[in-house]
Length: 229
Ligand SMILES: [Zn+2]
Image (tube, rainbow, N blue to C red; front, side, top):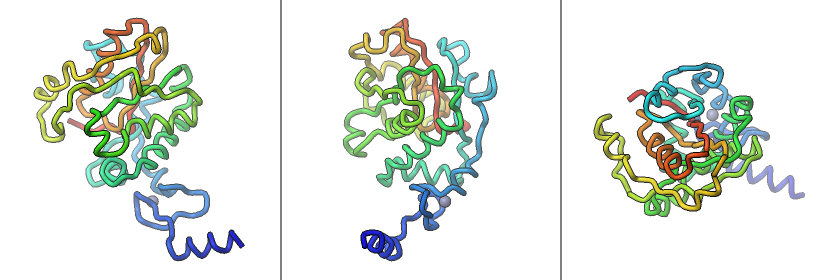
């Protein structure tokens, strides 16, 4: 009987893919398999010295960096990330984080703790969640390590960076993060996670803050997407 009502409910209110708007089938959640498998992969997890790692050259010693997909203007990933950030769909972050982790298992194999890049508290309260933490949660479900959200904090609410030029962005991200209870991450292999990397300035500032306070931690960086600056 319960199944009947579930079927009737689904018939009246089909679950739709956030990427393409088509009805989802039984085992699909949030994003249909077609959308999930046609996102433009970078395959950086199998390469060295790729453009995302180059963003950090000469700036900070990180273990490695990667972005899972290319951010293409008008592409499906843009639709998905827009829903994640502005249309209250935290589940999109979890689904994409999980898929990224499934495909990059060996790249992630030595990670001991996942740290999402924090939002300033005012923005997080406005949005209701931190999209990077949703992605981190998806990764955590696959590789089975904890997400740590209380050590790294964003102390300055930066204005939206979308339209700023590269040089201004670098200036804008200095000293915007703070670290508390550094002992939690001491001697740990830390995976720093964010949704999109462009110039790398925000991730660099976050990694710098961690390294300054916790010199013994080792930092790798993973994002869902890379966009050209
Ligand atoms: Zn779809």
